[in-house]
Amino acid sequence: MADQRDKILRKAAIKQARRLTAIQKDTDKEIRRLLKKALEQINHDLALAPDPKSWQAFHLSSLKENVKRALETMERGASSRLGSAAGQAWQAGIDLVDKPIEAAGGARFRLDGVLGEIDTRQLRAMRSFMTDRIGDISTSVANRINSELGLVMIGAKTQHQAAEAIGALIDGGRARATTIIRTELGRAFSVASQERYEQAAKKLPGLKKQWHRSGKVHSRPQHDAIDGQVRAVDEPFTLGNGISLMFPRDPRAPAAETINCGCESVPFMDTWEQEV
Figure (cartoon, rainbow, N blue to C red):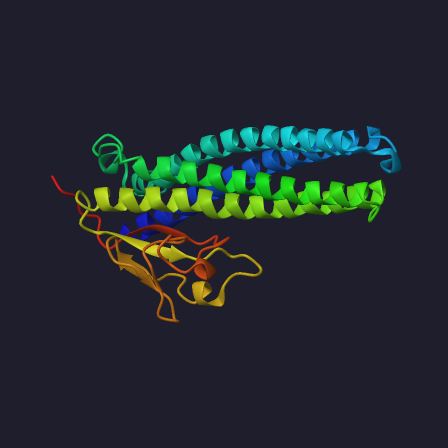
């Protein structure tokens, strides 16, 4: 009976973990759309600008203002979408603990009716951090685009060359945004799961957590090596290089171990005991 429960638990946990992937993909798709729209607007304004030989300071100033507006519009849309996605990832992280345990143990092991809400202060802090990171991308890209426009004005580049460079800058911003989405939404997911583990362990003495590798083609070997490692909910996982992580994408761990990490910490039951 316990073996059957364990199989159901693991299958349900993997299913819940895939919710995070879907949230990340949907968010990335929307932010790519917003960046593409910003690029189209900037290229449109650049194409309508007069011949650079006749540019005056006000032409450059007007283009810079248009760039600023286009990227601010992108930033507002991206920040709103990231804030919403962070809330979804947070709830999915809670469900990573609750749903598999209920699926394997039945209604008697339903946790959402027994445990209270977890503290969302960390979620609010993470939302603010994500918004700041997107703002940094917007500002950085705008400044570099303005430098390209300046090169056009002094005759160092053609408008066509500047348009190509601007496209590359937007692509760079898109890549940075994708990293933020994967890492920070994943972090919100994992933080919520860890908080839920600590709550649930008070009711389920047999509850532990197990490292589940991402399965990516270019995954970290040291993360793959601890696939299946089991720890008490309040103990960290330990990598072969001696680094400890309380959960995947632990903000206290080195960035090299957390950026774009796709691993998860899934529920593991030593025994199916329950506190009365």
